Amino acid sequence: MTPEQNEIYTTWVKLCTLLSEEGYTTDPRKMKEVIASFKTGCEPTKEKSGPDCYFVNEEGQTRPAERKSTTAKNIKGSYTGQSKQKSWEEQVTYTQKKIKSMDRHYFDKFCSKSGHILESWFITGDVAYEIILPQLEKYFSGDGHRADQRPAATISKGHIMDHGEKVL
Image 1 (cartoon, rainbow, N blue to C red):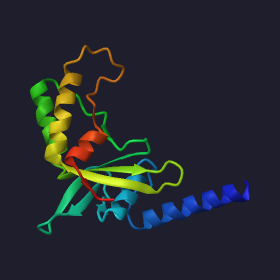
Image 2 (image 1 turned 90 degrees about the horizontal axis):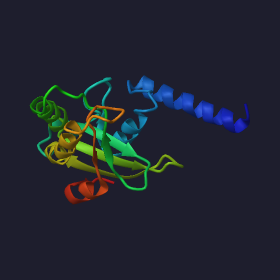
Image 3 (image 1 turned 60 degrees about the vertical axis):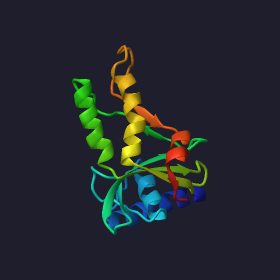
Image 4 (image 1 turned 180 degrees about the horizontal axis):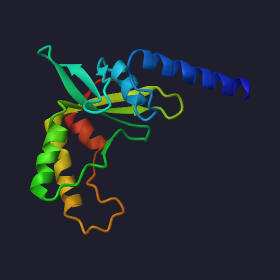
């Protein structure tokens, strides 16, 4: 192992140890949620399922939130792998529960080289639902020739900037 590789390994072990000691995930796929939560004043979840983080609203209540992150050129949020229900009505009910139950949906853009969080926005769960539902309907009622049959949607940079509030 080169000295640089050893430094990377040592840093990785230190990061995982610090996160673990505080009860946070050490899953590399979820670490950005933890880091973005810290930077935006949220409390990352310590649970494996449910909200990604919690924020304190204007009334002083702790509320649940979803986080989406990207290193792409434009900030966005992908909602993939949602369970496909038997009927469109059941899909609407499922989506409403899944999306609206999160009071905020955060969208975080990270630098792919440094790991710095470059920007963060949020939209309400109600707005996220209104953006996602029409996309899911097209997906749900499609011709069925996709490899992944689960409904999916994306909240684009335009949606985020039109309906969101910038945090960072």
